[in-house]
Image 1 (cartoon, one colour):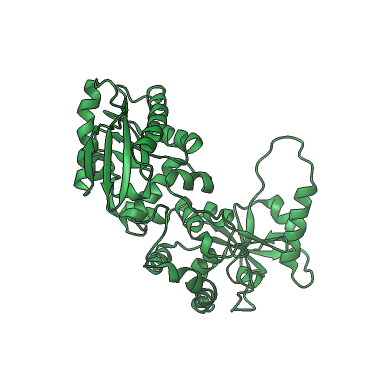
Image 2 (image 1 turned 135 degrees about the vertical axis):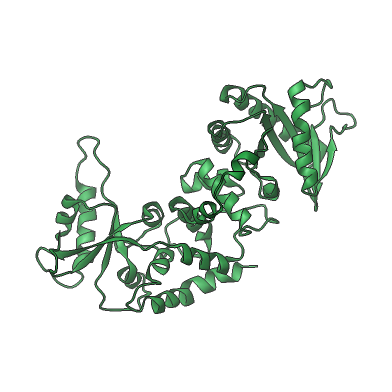
Length: 399
């Protein structure tokens, strides 16, 4: 805020990093504009394509949390106040900077912004070339430091788009186009990685990396003020290609055979027993489980393949949990009533699972991914899900 015209040396040195980044991206930059009749003016005003940001920049001599957080708070207050006076249609943008900001401190600032200023756009920059801006309109400016960027393996970055938590966040972004009976996930509009992190219950840095990867692959609409996926059909094809096999399969059998829908009844009864069981002391979290593949498709009313041995996803092989269900592991060459699967992407799988008549069931996206390569008419089942659920609800959003 240019009230007295005095600037610290560090701020004068870092200001060009900010203005040059905007100019290279095609933004018009006005440095320290004077507002008639106002004692204070913004540090910078940038505009492009009808979008205007009023910027307050604060620079810390040391990149420590106890230095950057107070400066960030000050920048937030000043940016909001000055933007309102300068141009009611402009967006305030609070930016903090230092010579080198460690990743841990970046995450702390991002988390603070998510907790206390979720509605306001903010930026974090340093002299090493790191830039993070929370508003989607500024996504083209985001950059990792040059040295770190050169050492990132290209193949790893590409495949990491479909890591466990990234697949979960993909489901969160796609959830508004899918009925909640098919997918359990928060449904909202998220303007930046901080808001997505809070909704998806992941770290801000995880969400930042994920959003950056989507932007680099051109799967986000740069003209939207919210995170909106485009080119969905291409994204889904890449997601399919990157999907690992569902995980290790273990044959299991019933200790005592029951009647019709034995597995569904066992899952339902186990869930009721856990709810009724008093908790005496902190203990290991219960083993997460849910139906998968064709059995899950049947529960969702999307079944195409009938008579296949059902698959049950289990977070880990837990003898007590299996006994509660009435299952035991099959001996080599013995009878198989249920295939147990240890998921390779547990968070994406279990967080998005739905309840159908008190039975946990894989979400429709997970089923679509899992059945595609199954020899028992898996491709036909995937096509049925695409035709009935995914195509009409998702493909019409692509550009």
